[in-house]
Structures are given as structure tokens and as C-alpha cells.
Amino acid sequence: MMINRQFESIVRQKLLQTPAVVLLGPRQVGKTTLARTLAKDWPGGAVYLDLERPFDRLRLEDADTYLRAQQGKLVILDEIHRAPGVFDILRGIIDDNRQAGIRSGQFLLLGSAALDLMRQSSETLAGRIAYLDIAPLNAGEAGAAGIADSTLWLRGGFPDSLLSPDDTQSLDWRRDFIRSYLERDVPMFAPRLPSETIGRLWTMLAHSQGSVLNQARIASALGVTNPTIDRYIDLLVDLQLVRRLRPWGGNLGKRLVKSPKVYVRDSGLLHGLLELETLNDLLGHPVCGASFEGHCIENLIQAAGSRRVPYFYRTHVGAEIDLVLEKGGKPEMAIEIKRSMAPSPEKGFCLACDDLQITQRYVAYPGQERIPLRHGAQAIGLLELTALLAQG
Image 1 (cartoon, helix red, strand yellow):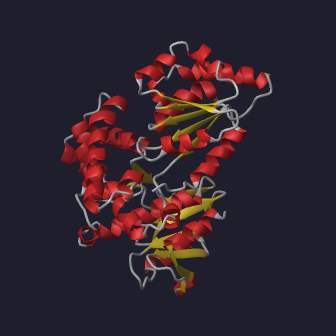
Image 2 (spheres, helix red, strand yellow):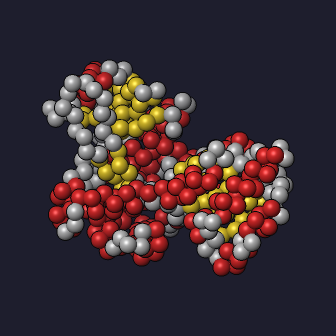
């Protein structure tokens, strides 16, 4: 089954505005499939190079000559971290093309490590490049393909996992994915960091999904220092496998929690790390509620886009919001997440909304009907809320 990505139109638009676009996302998330789809009908044609293939890397031995010979085509460079020296050459070609009046749609670069690529490219391509993050399949994309949200929640949004013939094969794919990251990507992007320890950390984070990060406890369990845990989590965040959700930190004269919450971003990988194969396995596991929360948060942040900044809010006296979306420097929307068909906001949620003076108050739940609740809140299905956010 081929699932249409909502993201495709965004990439096309960016390529029409910018000489080079970097598409960032984990392995197997669909970057290459999306790029090949764009290449099929790109005006003037397209060239695709996979820089993990020796033959394609050989083409860039004289990168300046080769890339200039592709004038008028969209050049797609996959696994761009394999050829970091190309960025200097791209700058010269882009600047020469600008002199000739060509200002868009020249290069699409695909990569897996966000910070590493952004550091390399920002030094040479400032003002010439746009960055886009591509996430696993979301609830809207899965729903449009007739896939139930419960299936997306269990298996996650990586296409090969989501579209597996059965739950067993899906879990097998995710086990292999996790192993390949630890055996291949961690040594490649962070050769000095121990893969086995990072694997243990990743599993610990899965067991404490959605909890406020307690670095001291994790450091003690792994026998390392707090700064070391920072570096390990930085790597997982950079590879877009883990999300640090920052606490809202405005000055309200209240004692606010200052440590971030940490989530394994893809629910399928979370369940793979915890060896949860079926929906019944998940529903009977202590991580069930936190897993659904993380699943909703990832979908909502993706729908909210770059115009809204996500936070959580918690005071030391119990006022709490699972997800605060800030727009223009002001908290705009408060979202509580409940895996219940009869959701009701906690008292602490209402207190927190009053603290931040938020009037848009929603409780995301697995149902489809919108239900008015106390204290000005509304229960709303995940799909409807993501659609609401996507409208702006």
C-alpha cells in the first residue's frame, strides 16, 4: 500500500522558494520514497544519488564538475552526511546560479542527524538553505489510508512497521530497526559513545515514558555522570528518536518544574523497546497511558507546525497541562490527554489554564464526538484536533 504524505506539498513549496532544502528524519521514515516521488515529475528532470553507494560517491569525486553538469535538474543527495565536503561546492554553484537568475529548486539533501547536518550546512549555506523535519506517518495520513488509529498507536508511524502483514512481523521489523541504530548509526554519528549503554538508556526512557527527566537516577543506574547522560540524550534527540519536551518557564511568581519531560517519539519504537507485540499486551502494561499521551503529543506537535512552540506546564502544587502550545510568545492552547471514552479534566489542569490565562482548553481522547466539559474545556478526538491545528 502506498500512503500519500501530506508533507509532499510542503517540500515542493520550499523547493520553489529556496535553492537548497534539507529534509531531516530518522532512517526508514520515508525520506527517500518522498524524494523519488518528487523526482518523477520534477520540471527539467531530477538526479538521485545515494551516498551510501560507492558508485554514487564516486560520481562526486569531482563534485563541482558533476553537479554543474546537472544544471536545470533537481539534484537529490541522499545520506548527505557521507559527503560533508559537498556543502562548500553547493555554495559556489548556488551563488553562480543566483547571478544567472536561478534562485530555487536546485538541491534536495536528505539526512538522519539533524544537529550534525545543520552545523555543517549552516557554516557554508546560510541564507541559501531551508530545513524541514519529516516525521513518521501521522494520524491524518493513516486515517486517510483506512488505517485505524489504534493500529497506528500500536505499530507506530514508520511505513514498514505500520504496513506489516501482522503484529508479529511489525514487531520484528522494529526490533531490527532498533538493533541497526545501535550497531550502525550510533557508532557512525557518535563513535566515542558506547552503543550498549545508549541502548540501555533508550530502554530506560521507554519505561519512564512521559516522565519528568531525573538525570541523577539514570546516571546512577548506568554508572555514568550527569553530563554524560546529557550527551547520550542529545544524540537520541539529534537522531529524532527521542523528544525533550521543555517546561513552560514564564515568570508567574510560582514554583514551576524546570526539568524536561522525555518521550520516545514513535509509539511503535516505544513498544518495540518494551517488547509489546499486540494491542492487548499494550493495554495491560503500565506504560499504556503514557504511551497514548506520547502518541497524541507527537501528532499534535506535528500538526501545530513551526508557528507554535510546544511545552508542558507543571507547578510544585499540582497544576499541570500535558501540552501547552505557545504562539507569538503567548500561551494559546492547553491540551490534556485522556485515554478514556468518558474524559474529564483534572482540577490541576483547570488551575493551570487559569494561571496562564488560556481560554482554548481541550481534552484529547480516543473518541470522535466533541463534548463540552466543565471549566470551559472540550473533549475532542485526536484527528479532529490535529485538523484544527493544521488550519492555523
